[in-house]
Amino acid sequence: MPSVPLPTLQSADDASRTTCALSACLAGTRATVVDIECSGDEACRLRALGLCEGTAVNIIDARDAMLLEVRGTRLALGSALTAGITVQPVGARA
Image (cartoon, rainbow, N blue to C red; front, side, top):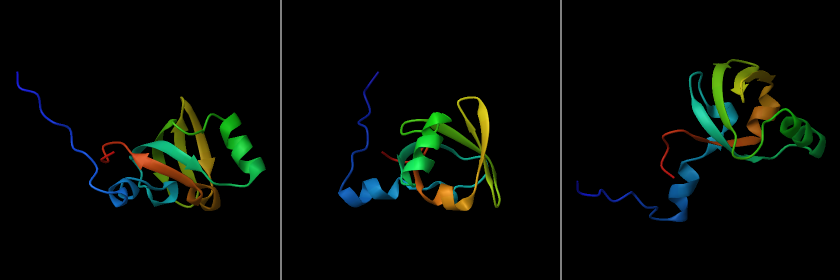
């Protein structure tokens, strides 16, 4: 069976297009956390709840408070927190 080459990044801009703020995701999206930019206490609490870099999240509901499934647990986060969390949607080019 012939091998198929994997796509490669053409520039640094390509990498930035694959990520977005968690707040920009719609219900039904699956994503991986890339970065958490919140206050120290907030970031520490999110990590204690299992939401840290490299963690897969499922967006269940994306209204005012976003409902997420993280490691088998549901978390509700407000828009101020979700705006500070950068994710890479599953299926986005890496």
